[in-house]
Figure 1 (cartoon, helix red, strand yellow):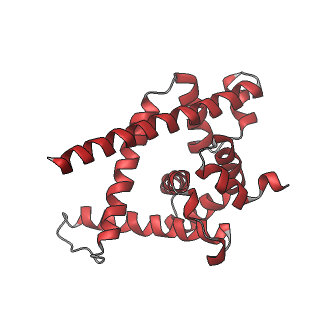
Figure 2 (cartoon, one colour):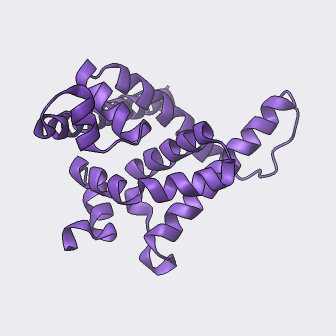
Length: 193
């Protein structure tokens, strides 16, 4: 069962292992979704919030600290934080951006900008995926289907679905890493100018 130990999965994820992300998602998707649903009281919002949390987990798996609490507690805090971020953002939009930020922390602003950039990079990376990989990832992570359900829906063997998801995640990771490298080079060039 060590293979499904959440701390080990997070360690493997932080070194880029897509299969570890799959296993971690399988273990915690319904917990995060239920937490999100409790907060949002809306299925669609809960799905979006769940997506945001797992995108953050994908990028920051190494931020988990076992001394500060369990993996479930860490995920619950992330879910509530993303919920509050969305709520604040919605309030700024409703009030025409005139409402002052409650938190003037530079770190909070940087996190918001990074999250927005990460989302944009992820959306662009998803667009570049082959159709079958994109569909399988969409059904698994946004449709909350099991791999078996996707296999039935796509009328393909389970092994093919597992491969589509694995290759899709690997392709996303490659594109995102390449995108971040280009961004870093551009930032370094701008600082030199």
